[in-house]
Amino acid sequence: MRELGAIGAVIDVTADDGFVATAVMLEELGFATIWLSGGRLESLDQILAVLAATDSARVGTSIIAADRFDSDAVLELYRRAEESSPGRLVVGLGGAHGPRPLATLGAYLDRLAAVPAGSRLLAALGSRMLGLARDRAAGALPVLVTPEYTASARAALGDAGLVVEQMVVLEHDPGQARGIAAGPLGFLATIPAYARNFRRMGFTDDDIDRLSDNLVDSLVAWGDAAAVAGRVAAHRACGADHVAVMLLNGAGERAGWASLAHALLAPGTQR
Image (cartoon, rainbow, N blue to C red; front, top):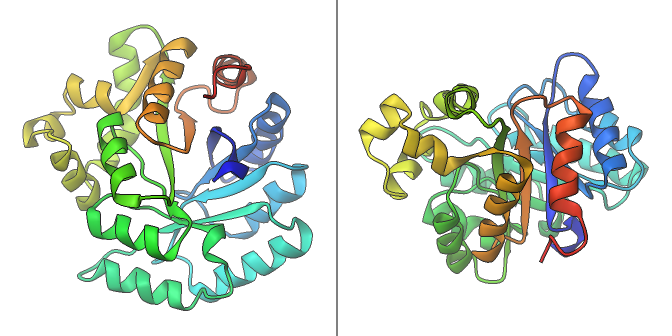
């Protein structure tokens, strides 16, 4: 995953085109890879819009949900991206829910044979999904994990890539920071795959139900940019090839991203 660089930036796809301007800003600030969060992705054309507006940054999807976008649509996205911006699209996939998610995603990948394995990543948390990411993609793309989890994922993946998405809040006040983090964390905690992984990492049902300080502080980095850099460094030390940072407050504003770029992208900070 060297072509991604050590650090990337994650932005939310919004109904207006503001996210495209944010992507341009992030490229100007020096982020070599820009990830588009898939939660509010309405059209795969939104991904192409970011590729068209930026010059050389890699653009990744985090993630395209298999239960929302069929394989033909993803194949067409990849074809058009290769025509207009060859080598720049990283197809992050996941979202296979139901009784047999592993089989569902495996069949989906069968239909995506024209997208090279080296150009796709899988949202993976459990051991079997990590195995699928190792065997049928360039690697795994987990979110809401601790550095200790990163170390275990690194061991499971072997030489495959490991891209960790880290949510961050630039806020010194503990109550305010945890309140901001509780929004996305509270929603994701209701999704069974995330709740199961929280338990795997040692969090209790009580931690999950009430979004305990321990849970929030372990999964979301908050404080100043130096605190965020410390958490990113911990993931890197535990085996992450690339850490994608998602700013939860001030996500479209230059000041916060500029402070993160200074802390994360300065020479000597990406070892």
